Structures are given as C-alpha cells and as structure tokens.
Amino acid sequence: MSDLVLMLMRLAGAFYFATAFLVVRAAAQAGLMDAVLGALSGAPDRREARAQELRRWWLTLGAVLTGLGGLSAAGGWAAAAPLFLASALGQWTWLLVVAPRLVDPFDAPDPAGRRSTRNAAIGHTALTLVVLLSAPQLGVWSKLPILSQAAVGVGWVALTAYALRALWRGRLGHWTPAHSEDED
Image (tube, rainbow, N blue to C red; front, top):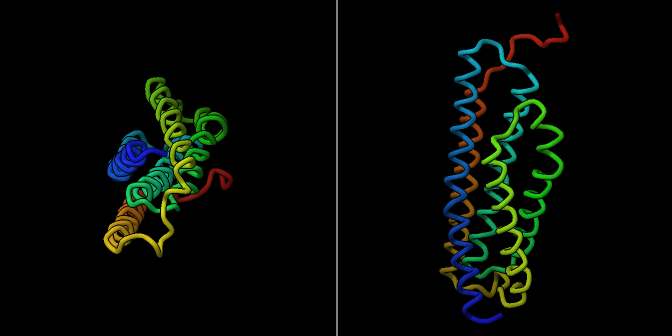
C-alpha cells in the first residue's frame, strides 16, 4: 500500500475513534428517552422494551469495537485488522439477522436511520478491506513507538470506560417490572 493510502487509513481510523464517543452518547440518550417515554405511558410492552435494550447494547458495543479498531489503525497497530473485520461482521449481522428478527417486529426502525446504517456499513466494509490489505504494513505492539503505544493504550481505556459508564447509567434509568407477566 502506498504511504497516501496508509495516511488516509490512519485519518479514517482517528475519525472512527472520535465518533465512537458520540455514538455511545447517542445510544445512552436514546435509552434515557425510552425510559422517560415508558414511564410516561405506563407499563411498556416487554418485547418492545427488550428490543430497545438490545438495540442500545448492540449500538454501544459496536461503536466501541469500531472505535477501538479505528484507534488501532490510527496508531499503526496490526490489531486494527481483526477489530475492523469483527466490527464489519457485527454491522452486517445487525442489519441482516438481529434487527429484522429480534428488534424490528417490536420496535420498528426509522427508514432513514436504517438506510444511513446500511450506508455506514458499506463504507465501513470498504475501509475494512483497506485495513486488511494494509495489515502487513501495520506494526506489532512491541514494535510501535512508545508515543503510539501510550496514545492507543489511553484511548482504549478511555473509550471502554466511557461505554461502560454509559451502559451502567442507561441501565439504571430503565423501567423494570415489579412482577413478570407470567405471574398474572
């Protein structure tokens, strides 16, 4: 791969890392909004609540995986290749299997949002191919410059901690029934 392609891959990776924080925040806000709307409307449908929770978790974990892959690419670490591949597989699994079967029947998607998710998955898949082809030129951890190791290490901890905090806080805001429907 040319130096220009590697530089563009690193820039795209940095962009993915930065936007991962925004996606985690958006997922947490959506969870809070679901909780507020559920509280205002009374007892929400359990299936809809589970679908919303699955969507929030999948979006958050996918954003973390994508962000960590992006940070690894930006730092020139070879771990970017399996992380990007896993993230792309996760996005397509969501679009083709999980969402249509487990989420959409109970919590219909916004058509514009689904279209943008599909377009993002296509773009991410293209970048995944670039990362996979560039993998031989990316370094193993022990061969990275100390500043790259520090930046990648701190970034991994920061994004992971931010996502765990968002998931924890979002969980606390969710409606939980006092009894199950099976007890009635």
